Image (cartoon, rainbow, N blue to C red):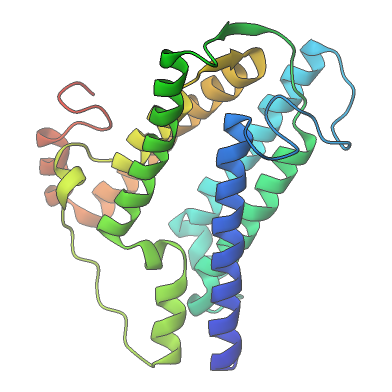
Length: 245
């Protein structure tokens, strides 16, 4: 596999991954894009509320399963026999983008508004908090290794023929407050809701469950990989809420 292809593939995957994430952020917020959590696409089935709720939960389950399964060490051990390690993460991003497109296009909004604070100071605060939460996610990714998370580092190392260094366990800045600041940011964003519709409530509840379950299984893997160093970190640092949980 040529170096030019690997580097170009990683850049394209990065652009698609970032673009998909931006669309998902706007989709959840019901802002600026044509298909949102409250506005169906032409592909979304015209189902009644009970069936629509079931469909939406199934879409989130499929989306979350792909995220977790393809990121697992068991899957990677098999997958990297087919896909070169230099583009494994980039390929993962493309599958994430595909599953996100499926979620967005087939999501079926469910009618009903539980509260509407749009146009009020509280609504503006919650909108700001929503984007602040995603800012925490982005900042936290750079604290560990943003370019490794998004596959660019692996491609660069292959192109430059640099041997990957072993991962060093460290806890920079926000990681001293909570063990999973990226998930803290996601939860802040999810629940900073100026207009809470039934659709958004379903999405938030399902995604919150996914985040908490995902943390549980991720920590099991981290304990296996890092041993006592991570157990000590667990004892000293909360999961997602400083000083609480």
